[in-house]
Amino acid sequence: MDIKHYMNDVGQRARKASRAMAKADTGAKNKALSLIAAAIRREADALRAANQQDLEAARANGLAPAMLDRLTLSDKAIATMAEGLEQIVSLPDPIGEMSNMKYRPTGIQVGQMRVPLGVIGIIYEARPNVTVDAAGLCIKSGNATILRGGSEAIHCNQALARLVKEGLAGAGLPEDAVQIVETTDRAAVGELITMPQYVDVIVPRGGKGLIERLMKESKVPMIKHLDGICHVYIDDKADIDKALKISFNAKCHRYGTCNTMETLLVARGIAAQVLPKLAELYATKEVELRADAEAGKILAGYSRLASATEEDWRTEYLAAILAVKIVGDVGEAIEHINTYSSQHTDAIVTEDYSRAMRFLREVDSASVMVNASTRFADGFEYGLGAEIGISNDKLHARGPVGLEGLTSLKYVVFGHGEVRE
Image (cartoon, rainbow, N blue to C red; front, side, top):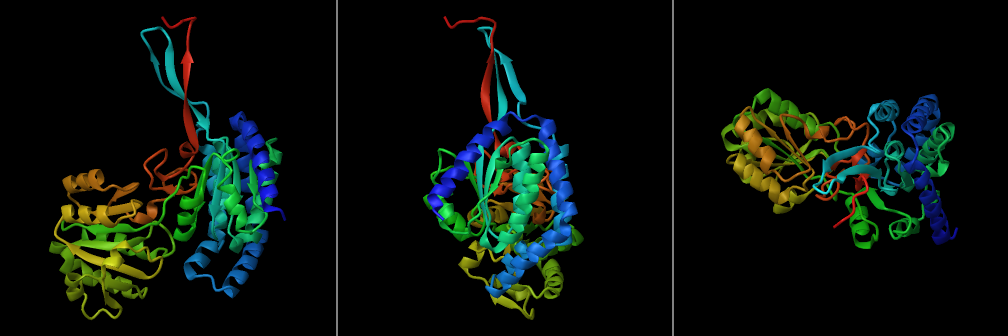
């Protein structure tokens, strides 16, 4: 295959489809999403079979446990994909919405209209659910998308792509509005990120290595986050039961996700009370605790205890490993988080309203939480229907990126024959 020629053709078709999608009415977009959701439920057995092919190949190739977890398409995951599409149907269509309308002294009325971004290229590894989430969000927001999934999920992605095209055709929308890159050749990625004439935005969903490469090579703007070094801070005014429940869930619910807690901060005044109880919980999951000297003394006797190094505060483990540090107060916790966090998601457990509000104001992350697990940092959980990714950038979109994050604004002006003097 001539990769350059192939990707150029994909880009041209996506650009043409984007113009049709930009003017598609809400009813047609919602019909496509509903048809895709129904097809996913109808073809659940076929999707599981395709996913099994991918899993067998991945295990044979020694894929890491965290990646296998992301690759697995369970019954719940299939149901969630369909439900996510139906939730997107129920959301208001942002396209064409006008806001901030104001009359100027000249008599003209100036405001803004929400419009699609155009063509969105999405690059992801071992996440078949992204195929559906991305397709659904792009369809509803009036965009075309080019999906380049990882080779690990090729069979499942192709099966899902067929269902997406079926839904688009059934709603009278161009099938090229959602295209799966057919080749697993890495050169296709290099072409996709250097086609600004066809692609308006790149959204990478993958490991740190992939995103670092794209940051260096892409000629197309990106919506991205590099890693997820998330914190939970247990304040000395915390409810102990809440602290135990949240800190266990934030670490152990799933290890391989970007919103999993990687560092636990505990206020000195409550550490002796809460850490031994947490250690009992973590022991049930064989979590290794890498503790600073002060926390290490309290945790002495824990079977999987190690001394934390400076590097541990900067590490996204994606595994059953947790860094633990004792801090003096909320101010020291905020200082640590703003120094070491990847600005993804950080949480405080406290019953003190003033400290909670200070944490929300001063922690410089895309999602900041009070008395809730970091695992909630997710487009589906935020009511976005799904997410196309999570951004810890500060321009355009931040946090889980849903429908509005896939749109832009243009100024619109209404006049009555006014001319500038």
